[in-house]
Length: 409
Image 1: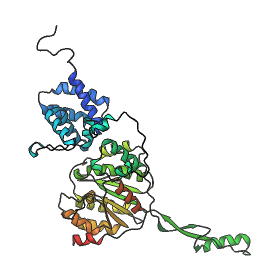
Image 2: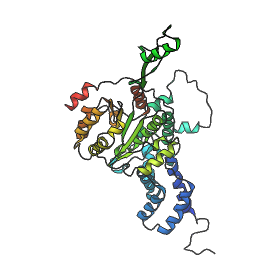
Image 3: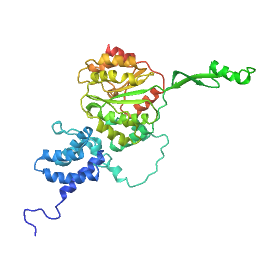
Image 4: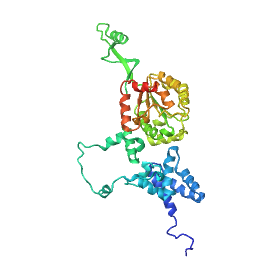
């Protein structure tokens, strides 16, 4: 017989079920959580207890979170799933159309991936949900394609399904790199230059009666590609998607060198040579201790120019500098190091996600120090910008717009 103060047998174990459901929400939202972590979470909570909310939070955090980039998503999911039922009501209100929330009751909007994991199908209208089981054939000729919508969608606003589709599109990208002439020549039947040494050598075989001209042409080869990617907190969403693009480049051609920086510089070139992108990102996560932290661009560039520039910037390398230009040191020494980097490479392209805003102006000291020393200034926030970058890498260098020069001056 059950004691009055003890829970009924049917109610025992519901808390473990809730932990399992919470893990499912995190997995749908994008965190790599498997059954083993759920099994570990239940005894961990039993040991730590649930009397204090902070203890319960950090217990689940220690089991489910293993990267800095996952903290924000876990924090939102925890407070929505466990803390206060009214937050669920406000979350529903923020996602439903044409619902206004008073400013004093407004909460921070949750991640779209988290909202999709907690409330699947909520972004659809009621009529669409009612008609969902029906199969309707639609003639898509001359209609607006969903793929075009995905091309222009910001990486920061994508859902989990859209991010997965964008990653597949990035993996299929092929960049026809510009070939540049080298100092070497090779034999070619229709070459523009006569190879006198080969011509005289072949004439000896016929006794000099017949002299057939041997020709050669200059060897062309794509220049090395050096990538300096900012992984600070303000860049974490874009840098992770750009790493998928870099992984496709690294496995498509040789002489691609990738460096990640926040408060320190880390060479991750050999990790990106793994064919499996998930394994490559896992190795990078273990090797990079300053992911989603601060950034010291001037100090990092000084370290790169001193230790790596002579190794990787030879033969007219092209440099992709991916950063929003927000420097913790307020641009100290940044202009000098950017000038040195610019003089050491063939072409310096700055990719900045802040350019997605039409009203962008170079107001911060870091941006004003970097901008005078770049050849091209491009956005990097969606698939369309990555396709434009691929086209730019296959063509000649473009002069930096005069408007940016005047803005800095």
